[in-house]
Image (cartoon, rainbow, N blue to C red):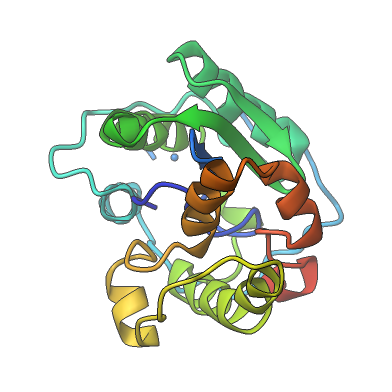
Length: 218
């Protein structure tokens, strides 16, 4: 996703979760190495990108990259902590302090003016370490729709109960069209938490940004 504080949907998609915490506070050419086995993950119906080219095009749109650089696959990964670790190491190698946090990656201390550089590096790392096809299930659009529902029905009421003000949500159609960048409540919470001197992680513990696992199932 392009906006600060946004998640790249969820672990059980073709893209790994990455949460960007502002200072107001997750790809085919040559045959890649096989991903580690994960018997707990069963492939579902997949109506997302069918080819490497389609995948890269969609990934570029998600991250708002108009001139994506060429990227070779380093390794296809499973949607587990080992896969997350590889993406985190890729981002860390580019200077972003990424760490595993629950079902995704968390990057702390990203300034607004760094967002474009981060988005480009996220594109490169996701393209270098794509989730293997057999681990893909819901389409990115379906995940965004579920993410929107979670924000609207669970996350926003939770943070509003803690005293945070969240802007009016766009329509689902607008949210999908912007790849989720048109409405990022957790970024708004982060800005207000900084102004109030609140601990953003404490807020996140009470009102998790991450969708529950059952919402990420096919």
